[in-house]
Image (cartoon, rainbow, N blue to C red):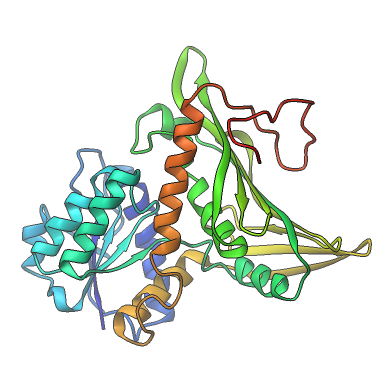
Length: 358
């Protein structure tokens, strides 16, 4: 059974990984040692609520450094959750690898850009690390259902993903994200790559977040369009100023079938919905979809040896996601790219004139 080292105790570490680990430990006790999670926070920011849940108790014990944590954790039976900003992933992977750790669960995206991705790959290769990237949408029951339906469907014409939520406070008070492409878009890109195969960014744009006189550049939202192999088109629209939460995926096929899926939007409700439109008729499916728990359980199962390494997604999808995000950032920063329409909304004439043709 495996122990856990949580490296980074901010929103991702203490706010997401810790409670999901508690659920995973309850449903799969054969994978997890019955010992507290050990946490280290290398950043200066305060912990949520003044301190992590269970600090000093039976859920989480906080150490003041990686070296101190190493004294109570055997790397041979420990999984390190790397929940720090993408820009510092390579350095922290290197430090943890020198202390003997070889199993890592890394928050998305795998790296901040192509240069950081090369550093991460170098550390992984030199130390023979086993790395799983946090990818709940790739482990989602909804994504599995879509993939199964498309395996028997006709040619896919387009897949459009809408990701809406309000993110004013976190963006206005700082944080690790440099632009909106890093927030929700990695989830969508992973699904597009799984359903449609590799693709190329052909248009991208971003907006600033504004509240009164305060402005956070490039954090209001992000849009991009991709051309995939075989001609299918992928679109992602992320609005971080939306008054409503929405995680929707719409798939249209050449034979007129439309699939409209809704991923869960809150931690307290893990039910997904799928509407299948065929010949003017709708069939609806509802199913439980605790995707992050499924993702972590799958990672620990592979680390424990029950599944061979890399059988789920490997690192290709996650590395390619970083490259596509980097391309989108460069295109959006060019200043001459179009304002992309929301999925399902017809563009005005000429509004999709872009540096690359979609």
